[in-house]
Length: 124
Image 1 (cartoon, rainbow, N blue to C red):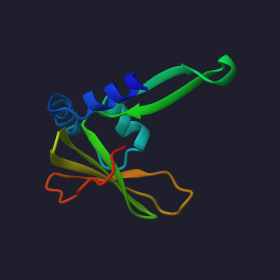
Image 2 (cartoon, rainbow, N blue to C red; image 1 turned 45 degrees about the vertical axis):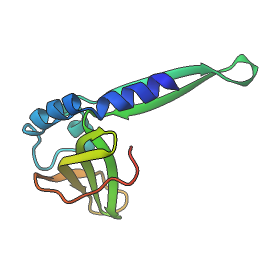
Image 3 (tube, one colour; image 1 turned 120 degrees about the vertical axis):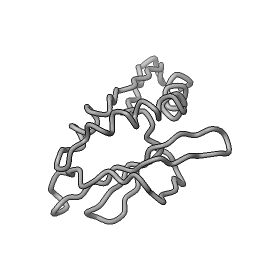
């Protein structure tokens, strides 16, 4: 559990945000969330623990540097909010907005908002 927490804290650092801001310049309208994650240098953090009866428990999370939270604006719009967390101060630098046609459609990048007014109530 501590390894996952450490990876998430590092991903929310000022340095991680700086790398994310540089990578965001390569984002293009219409790409998928998977393509966005690849462009932003996302990685999968894996943590394995021993569970009840000695069975291994595995927890996985996709970590995107600088991403503070994901906000569902509506059923068809979603925003990934980027910035950094320094204790009591959370800086929001930009947001990546996705949209989809219907509930079953894949998300595609709509725009990168360089002047967001988003807040992250819960991180993820």
